[in-house]
Length: 256
Image (cartoon, rainbow, N blue to C red; front, side):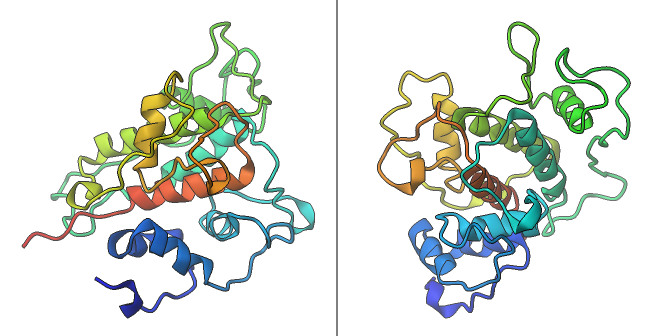
């Protein structure tokens, strides 16, 4: 189906991206998205490669900015900041298949974010820390683990490989919980043959995420290197998270 037959309006909700994922190729989607003129609420992203997805991540409530309308797109994300983004993603993924409602009496629910934390989630994460509740929930669900020494290192910059590992954890958890995955009914991109991940611990995860609405994409969207051990910058985190939410929001077709 030709994408030109569709009128594409400025995105008011990130889930509208699903339309693109179903009717156009990734290249066409990128071309259409880049042509959209919407008001970007941040003063420092107008020339950013990911400005549209930064805007979508902000409007969806996945990420917030800093004072003076700054997003700081080139700033690396810390491990605790990524947990915060991932938990926001977790609660925005649709649970119910709108084409096939849950049977009467069958309700799928998510664990609630604790309002208080009684003990430290990790030795280096105090119970009073701003991120403690989200870190505790992410640990209980299985999205995160500490290092061999038992520490979480919340202020450490997260790598691009760690970003993919955590997003994949959300993807796997949600599909097991919901018992449906709309992507099964549509063609998905082939995994990207990155040149620098063959011996990397996250190779399989990165490959899976590269065919998952292209959440894993080349560094700066050019070439064939993923740069798994480089810090994940805020602009790419916004893009990868929006793409993951897009894939998790594709509904199966209604019964014929």
